[in-house]
Amino acid sequence: MPSTPPAPGAASHVLSGRRPVEIVDIGANPIDGEPPYAPLLEQGVARVTGFEPQESAYAELTTREDGAHRYLPYAVGDGAEHTLRLCVESGFASMLEPDRAQLGLLTDFPRMASVTDRIPMATRRLDDITEIEQLDYLKIDIQGGELDVFRHGRRLLARAVAVQTEVGFTRLYEDQPTFADLDLELRAHGFVPHLFVNTKTWPLAPLQWADPLQEQARHLVEADVLYVRDLARLDVLSEDQLHHLGLICDLAYASYGVTLLCIAELVRRGVLDPDSARIFRDQVAVRAQPTPSR
Image 1 (spheres, rainbow, N blue to C red):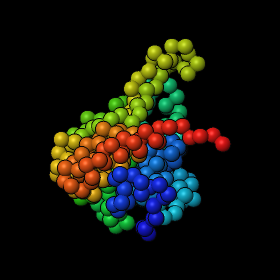
Image 2 (image 1 turned 60 degrees about the vertical axis):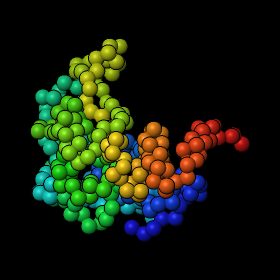
Image 3 (image 1 turned 90 degrees about the horizontal axis):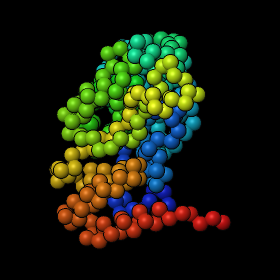
Image 4 (image 1 turned 120 degrees about the horizontal axis):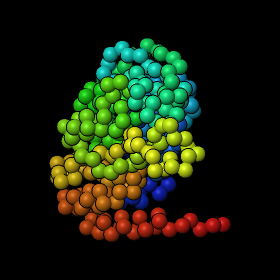
């Protein structure tokens, strides 16, 4: 991917000045709006390579391509041939078969996850994708296929500092790995859970959305969880990794505690000035101020 010049103001961040944060987004379907890493791209401190095998979603993504955005139509997984199940709602598309019994517990899920087409599809192992030279930050949401990606991406994940993954608490698909499986795998890679980005609960059938009881009749379905490198072992991270972890947690998640820990470690090593933590706090305070109206 060609180099991207920093955006105006990007150089002012206390952790800027290193190579761009290399983001990989697996399951980049834009149905959920702006991704959490959008501020990193806006500040000119990151680049993203996204993967989306659904033709319509991929076509939409390619309209955004520029020096900081690149998209590829690959299905990422275990490297084997599978069948992509397309569903009424595109967000339910999966290599796994929907679990009708589990879906039936949740209002309207059987309709939304109804399979409309089955497409034979080859998958590629993350470690085998030559277009990815660096991976600092992985965002992944592929409806039950996350574990295969982690198991076949050990080389690239070894240098990553953050992973946002969707985790399931309810098995919406047959043989779907759940939160426990993904948590064990990511811990084996050296990551620990840092925060819940969001959680999804849903009314239990037969309650409908108009039912006054539906808010008190919800079931935990899934969540997006941010994993980071073990914060008790920041001493083993490289300078680039500390810069990138601090930038990601600040700009993508407003998790300032991690950023301050990274700054403190870089100060300890003599890489940053001793006043860097104060400068960062001042930068956060300025960002929090409302923009003057014209």
